[in-house]
Length: 374
Image 1: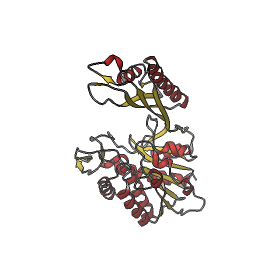
Image 2: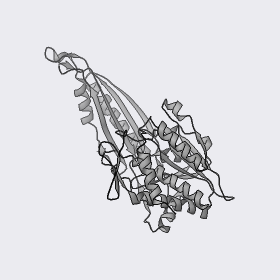
Image 3: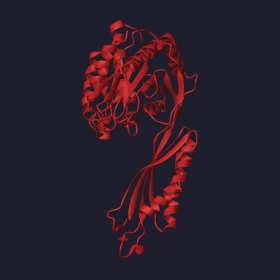
């Protein structure tokens, strides 16, 4: 029932609509019109105002067609990372990629494409369902900000699926980490680097010593840590009086994340103190972790639907966050599904045209399985 040609064309259209984080207005307007044309009741919430950005989250509801059915939530995010303006998709032997100057935007427009195609097929074929709710979120990249500010009062679903993961259709994310963001300004004392360097305290040196004292990278099989940004200094002939560093910690176990963050903060503060200066450190928990057991109904449904299509269901732990982290911690059991996007967040990003069809087929089977098991 999935229309392969239509699915392909819609994806190619969507990736050419600029929607980098904070600039989702054009895509939001397109999706508002598209959902309304498919018979959904549609709203835009006030997340845009809260975030001081161009658009809010789009929420749509397709009324149930069977009594006693269970509503299900489908979610994908509208924004992309940079460089994401002026995407020119190229088809090369059934592989869709960008022209090479930008990302492609399969993350997450492949997810949006699957949802739209499934809604069309349900309408065209009068497929029974217990109600479908759609959430297209803003600013997922960089902190899940749209989902955090979603108007949850609009939602009735207690279960759902986010389409925003690598891996082929049949990949089911059942566990994802929490994340801390660490920002620190290490203080120093300015001095002339050629005349009186001994009068200064080199903030870059102090920061580098602190970083060298940290354990970074893969901490254990559940935990990672990274320092990703360092900025500071004014000129090569000035001993720098300040340097800013930014990093993160993640873990599938919250206590491990907390311990790793504490150790990195201690390294900064103790190293600064030992060098006669200070470090101003700010820690923010960006999102919580989640874990779905094998017997969770949303996992059972996703696995059963995969098997019914001859796919191999894979229950996977991930080191990345998604809107599923937010939904699960708001009481909605949500699994993140693989949609076969490859090399995301790079200009080498790609997806195969047949995977666009597989994603939609799998999602449609999930909707049918929800109804069968309601």
